Length: 458
Image 1 (cartoon, one colour):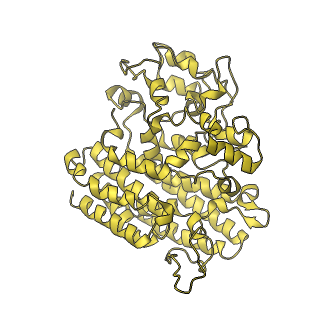
Image 2 (tube, rainbow, N blue to C red):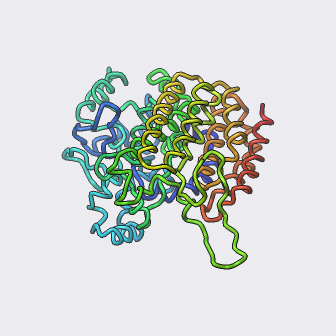
Image 3 (cartoon, rainbow, N blue to C red):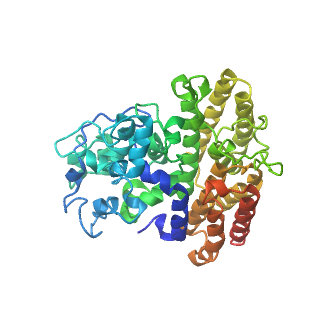
């Protein structure tokens, strides 16, 4: 298979260790054609509509234009590629049932709170099956208006998009779709709050390029490039980071989502600034590590800044002027949280504007070999002191892997040379395998060793 999958290999196995729990219970958006323009209202005709052997239901990838075995890939029970097809089914497993019992919502396989992301209950056609979970149209949009042009011999990708097909080849559109469930939206049943996580739901995490790799069911061959253009893995990563922060700040600013009674909504905060081991023993030493970029009092829950850290690293290379403002506004946002909600919301608005500006800058940028190396340097060098918590560490190692893979796929470094440092990258993954054994200093050392090996490829 082409594209990002051609080098990841062991990286996928290790990355899955950090996000498998989330993938096991999370799907993509039921309003998957929701872009900046609005919510998908077209009829969803069901996976069976796409499953013919002349369409996407072949047992082998022998199609002339597209693989045509996409349904088989979507149903793959042996890998994360099949996670979306399992999204509804897993609700009936012991863990899903236990979460539902704690929340008091009844059967999770029919509970609206769960179906917002674990299924595709959009406007239904005759062949629609709720048990399909997160099916084709959950990402590509309700197919009724574009199906005819989609299978027409004379149809084009542009025609399909004009008729309502979601243009997932555009990084910003893809990120918006994925974020609806892999971070949350303000639409009903698409926000995993702290109460749901306290009931046992996995922590929500997002990295667009890696998630795209896990689900990749297309070959980026010459035909694909002719129809949709060549993708840029680093751009996908960077735009995804910017849009994740935009979405996070947008939801946080909404009173309905940003607060839970007299408390802030803790979903937005770094889990492990609170969920740390404590003890009454006289020889106990707290594990918290001071973070120089968060001007907040010791012991105050920290806003989850994993995407801020990645965005800052990319901005330093691509848009240094914006980076200076972004870093200043990031600190002001943390300080605002330590002041009061009004100050935090005002600061969030400024920071969200910075993220939007960076998204636009990334969308225009080609991300050269030198820039990609420089971003890795920033992620693994100047940002090291900010990896005081598990969430930031996970993003850092996924970014390192994603960016190195991107350079292999772009031909910037030989695959054999990259393979030679796989062990170092895997050691960094091992350092974030278990959130409760995360040790910042040891993680930084592991990531630094991987970074040194990558630098040698220059």
